[in-house]
Length: 158
Image 1 (cartoon, one colour):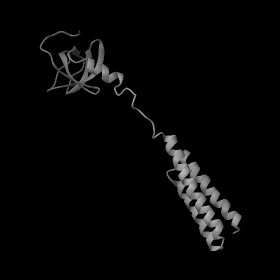
Image 2 (cartoon, rainbow, N blue to C red):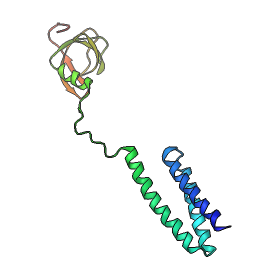
Image 3 (spheres, rainbow, N blue to C red):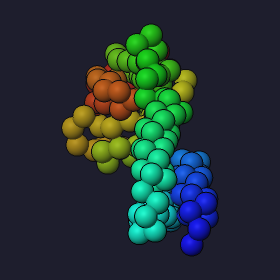
Image 4 (cartoon, one colour):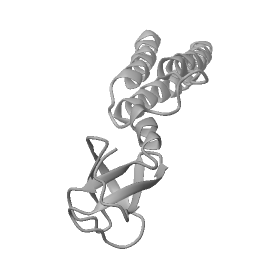
């Protein structure tokens, strides 16, 4: 094969590497790229075109480093979430429910649904089972998990 055809094969491999960044191929494009680049450099060495083989190899290494830097920037690994609010609205709302009373609308065995402060929430019974229609009080909120216990008072809502 001519040296310029082998150089074009190396460039084709570099294009396939670039496409691998944007097209999820499961590594097929990357493998094809490695085969193209490897074969072109190997055949250039066999045809005693050592200078061109070294240039292709050096250009490939520089290209891979630049492509990796581009990929890291594209993925956004440098994103700073320091100023972002760590808690979502559902977690804040769940924390504000501690101490509120509600009515169980489905059996809690131990998880189910309760009507608390006029809204339906997925809740978990603190101990045992709680029957539908029983009054409960919110005792704990861990993330968006709301823990309730059976209330001694028969008040339905605050």
